[in-house]
Image (tube, rainbow, N blue to C red; front, side, top):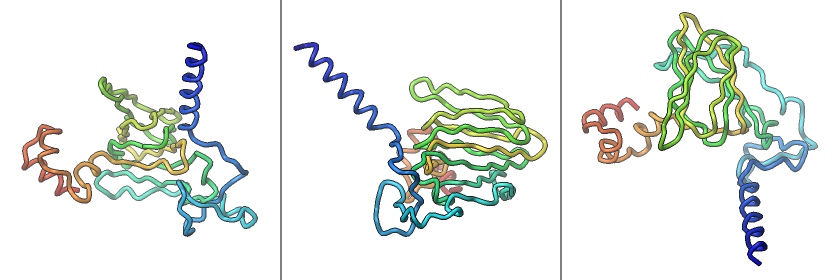
Length: 215
């Protein structure tokens, strides 16, 4: 009897793990229908008989992004919202442009692992492991190098070369999401309580007010 209970417990655990993984497609494709009134976990599908080649096509990734901003970087995404044929396929990509010393600030993707390939230039890239270690893992990347950022971990890049840099990144979701740490904490709508932020970041109120004003 004990063996049966142990087996059933193991079976329940494995089934719960399996159900938490990314679901497999149940059809050839599910071209996104962004304006559909149907609400689903993702994007609704249009009639597959109406699918066309342009639903699976995106043009323009060869064009540099506009890096004239305070971060001196630009991200050109190719998610399901931009390429409808990606819907439900569990994959997407971005082009990242970096002016000299440009930064992709610390952020997380709540739904995707990211694999980044340097196309041009030199990048300093890294991520921080989860609590309690919070270990910083970094690498200087050259043209042709590849680096992986595990799902849900804070990561970043900086151009440490003297010229512009370009990278292409693939992500394991058609809608990976992005949470930029500084924007989310100091630029939330509405603002997080000053008392919470002064305690969490060990800053005085003036510093918190200043940072919130920046975002």
